[in-house]
Image (cartoon, rainbow, N blue to C red; front, top):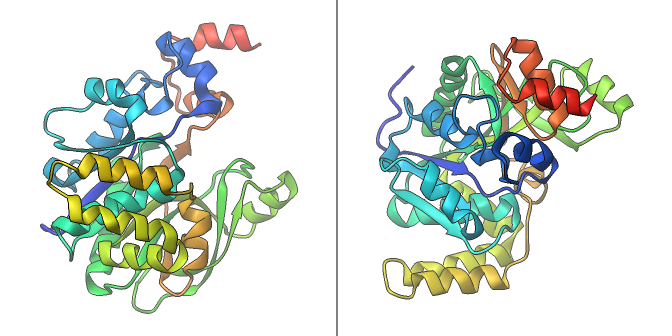
Length: 310
């Protein structure tokens, strides 16, 4: 794995509610906590695992964790002191804001920086192989500054609950990458089976790009959101910064980064297929149990949950 250099930042998304998994997280933790703050597989919280996963590639001082003010107690509990940058959103307004606000935040400090975006509620094995793909994407973006690379996971079945990507023609300037022909969100069982047999990929929402490119995409595709975020810059570092963030969020609509931005950015977007890893978006209890059984894991809560769910 190559050196990421001093221009790479990590954005870790930790603002979701994990509502579909709340029955399981309550069973495990004794409270209805969002899944990223739960030790689902007994190896630390999913957020903690994400931070450990990316640490060999991105230093903690360049890692930005984006959460919600309502989850501040969980973030204080779970974040090590070595992660100094935590952005607390006044409210959860979707992945559009969860990615674009920290992109603006990084750009105010490092206008030429490259960011790698990581959801914090995913399960992953073969982490070194995964990081090698992220590192490859960083090197490609460093050479082709206007490119946005989305990691696409090779599917292991016709999953209906995932977002799917149809790869297109190869990208000559980005070896290993393809253009994105189309996105499909949570298809029917029939379509998912067809996608699985046709070489489609799962959308991981792991994105690598320069901050300037992400901001330009926001300006083009969600201009109202971009304008509100841009106004915060005048208050950065001052006593009214928190007020400016509060005002911006109060006036902004929710947005979904895949639907509102990525799906409309075919001219700069490339997908990098990832193989040699086991990846799962732990969105439902059934998916969690299925993954744990597949890898032969048996955390303490599993037997009681299986009896209860039978």
